[in-house]
Image (cartoon, rainbow, N blue to C red):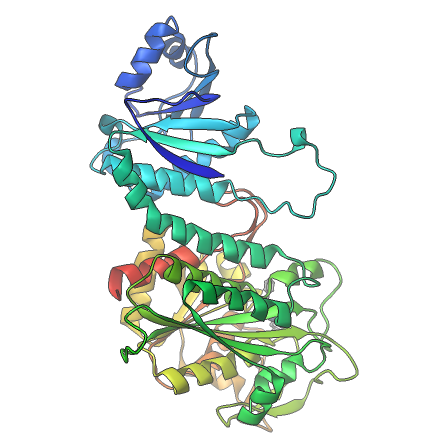
Length: 499
Ligand code: BES
Ligand code: MN
Ligand code: ZN
């Protein structure tokens, strides 16, 4: 979808025009003008409906011929004093399905200062556009028979305000961010016969044209380094495992400033391996590379907006398959850190991949911090559902920053504990540790304890995104499917605290 900004003084002609209406139900100046020309259709519609101007409410009004548009949509914006960036993004997102159901190809939304509280009109315009763009995302490349009538119509969305030029500027960084989110969503949505460790590594390579340095380690190189944990997971697959290292040096090519680091679980399909999963729902495990997807999309966003930060992204890419070469329950592997692991369940594979990727990241980059993202445990969905990721950290300050940023951008997290009692659960009878707890208790925490054994005291946070990487229903700025959850959160974390 194309996003435009236009001057209020030069309104465009569209299928639909959207006005913001607060809880006082008063029409803005522009809307009043239209109301007059349309013989009071707008005010009558408000009077004859249960529209109260609350957020999430929309009222569409069929206009008479010759009016500026065929339809006007009144969008509830609630109390002016509580409007923030997220509220505006959600309104932008919320109008998209309304416009598609009116079969609108183009639409414009009118911003007038009185309706948006303390926020500058240019910033409000950019946020609304951002929300609309993210909601209009649609992964439809595999439909060959859908007719025009069955597809969404909206192709162009214009925000009209005073100061359109400045809105274009405010929108530039958000547009780069959105392209990062879209990249993540695309990667997560692709089926596992298209996105596998090798093709996903190729996708990382495409970031080179934005100035990201991309290095790929194949199985031979990882074998030489001693990546026994990661390689064990991939050994049943016909496709080679990969470790991709992406570097964005926003502080200058030769800058020696310590980077911030992001590590992602990239299991392009998780059958469970020999500890095989039940057939029902197994197709969902195509998005078990969601953590890697976020790291890749984040690197794209940082490069796209030319972020003043040194950042590295490391993704461990493997396919977890059962085969004659697959790892067996009970196998003992030696990780890159030198620590040995008894693999009691081949379906607890994400932590094995991350073990080597985390150790590599802390050792080679001495980063300011590491944040890892992984669709790591079903247990986190039991604990937190699908609205919050699980947060684990060895550093209160980093944890607090992530929590605060999550609230701010609407990608929330909830912190769970790490402690000696949980750590003990993964001691093994035959090796330094085992890859599952002694019983099923606290499954997400024992998984995080496992990861902590590979971060070597670097400030670190682990986000278990199993509940949030994919959505079964449409949300404000996120259509159902791959969400890209985490890209906006981590981009904002950098912008607010590290840039
Ligand atoms: N990828 C799964 C976790 C998962 C489950 C993600 C559902 C998204 C939705 C992970 O590799 C896994 O299989 N975890 C096991 C761990 C268990 C064997 C200790 C789980 O959660 O059941
Ligand atoms: Mn698994
Ligand atoms: Zn998995």
